[in-house]
Length: 467
Ligand SMILES: Cc1cc2nc3c(=O)[nH]c(=O)nc-3n(C[C@H](O)[C@H](O)[C@H](O)COP(=O)(O)OP(=O)(O)OC[C@H]3O[C@@H](n4cnc5c(N)ncnc54)[C@H](O)[C@@H]3O)c2cc1C
Image 1 (cartoon, helix red, strand yellow):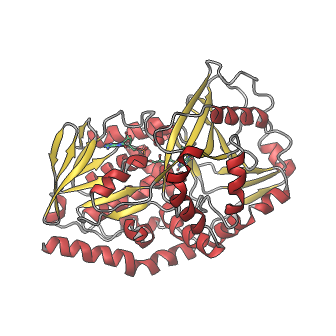
Image 2: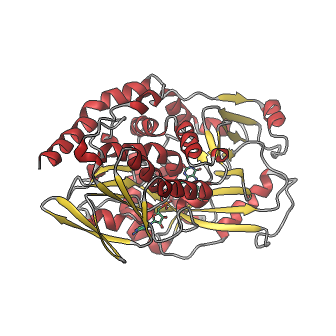
Image 3: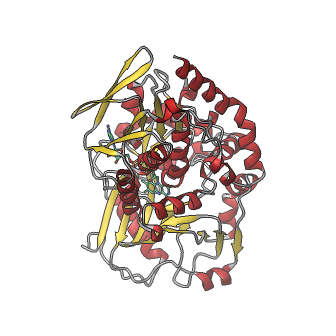
């Protein structure tokens, strides 16, 4: 009881007292790398705890490693191969974009809704049949980006989570024996014109206020740096601090392997619920039986909602479905990972070929893929790099994938204790930045589980913020 009380007090400190410190660190534009060593004061009681980590995507795998580092006993429950195609962490664009602090919905986004509905092949789409179910989430999503002040609040919080992400991932990848997977060479945004960039001005203004810096490349510079990019792009915005991952699936698999190598146990099963007695977690129910434990972390990505509800914390988690295509035999492409403003997609060399990732489709977890959306990406990729061989979208060398971004309507993940018991921690809902944000999330969860003070303020990520 005394332990639970102490953890609650620590949680309050983290959510209230540290907020100012977290924001100050953002305002200074400096990252929180100096906090990496903060408060590793784990008590003997904490470190004997047995923690079940549910889900081994980027978030779960990083969490397992950090929990082991904190001296906890760890069992990873994951029914599929860690880093496999079922995980959103497998097929993303690999951006470690510490500057991706602006939520997708911005002021005036509501005006675009009719257009989304009318254009099934644009970068954003809603499936009509799913609309009644998605409406409450969509209304919250639009409301959270209603004013610049709200967008700024989100950005302030996200910055604390994402700052230093490339460095944190480089450290993790090196520890897992795959340092070559993380590159820290900056990321590029390409615009067709100054006026197209000006239309994004709010987002860049908000980024500037949290200390993000970028370089502007004029047409000549852009051409010099990206000679194969189509001539319609005339302005480049280069963010030097950002990085990327050359193979997110292999990276997550390596992290999961590393967790096992340093002491985690793996149970290949699906978690389905919890046994909670007197406010304490006693076991995680899985399809293969119960696992007795002292704590659990829900890191099941877009499939976390039912588990969160079982832990007393129903949350408005929605899938923002996204797609990728990989052109395996491509020989022309970008020199660095690039996002283009007109197609809202990211093109990037991966170990397996040239990948284009993007699209947002609201249609739920169960609807079949609409591969036309992957074809849009493919067509756009070919138009970005006209010297790319013009192969058919169904050519054997073109691989396609659908994934589910685990998205909260306010653009912020849930990181914090469940309502039913502080023994269960929620760690999901990272939306568009889950690969990037996974490294610090793992550290934060381990700090909570071990009874240490979290290194950033967690109030903005409180799972209870939706009431
Ligand atoms: C097209 C696209 C592009 C993207 N680009 C980027 C990018 O460039 N940078 C970035 O940072 N983010 C990007 N994202 C978002 C990012 O991929 C996700 O936010 C992130 O992968 C979520 O990681 P996760 O570990 O929470 O979930 P997942 O990777 O989905 O992992 C969840 C795991 O939980 C397991 N699981 C599910 N249910 C259960 C259960 N009941 N019991 C046990 N295990 C369970 C699953 O099998 C899975 O392995 C992109 C997403 C998409 C779709």
